[in-house]
Image 1: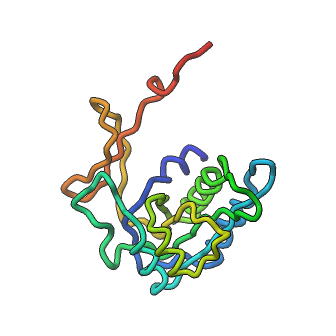
Image 2: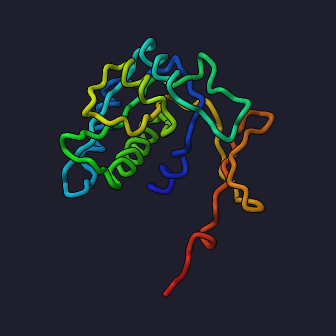
Length: 190
């Protein structure tokens, strides 16, 4: 069951924009993230949810969408996320966040898949613009943005060929993601 969720948890970049992610689901995803381990149990992460179309449009403009697809500026109107969750570090609690963001983002995305949604993690963000748009206090460091919605694209995994890790789209719009095999990943067995 976990393997099935992991395989469905792809970086989706096109969504059915007209299918909202209910606020109850977004709250549930953050609640699930709150149960995860945290370095020194400080729990320094905070979240901002956006779910209305005007705010989502503003957030969308602050994100860089797909570095390996230089001719694609991101999803068209109608294919954009219907929600975002911003992952923030509360600097009044901690200055380092260690593995906490990765753990909570994977938890949120696996929870989203379980609910029939999908998402994508963004680290390439115009943080100054986003801070201004959402009036985010300075003590909350913008770490990542999770785009969420009902996936509209097909993503397939395939074996890396010739060391090329770049994802790509074929003529049907299917998104191909090369992955390293387990034998390449294991550096040794002692």
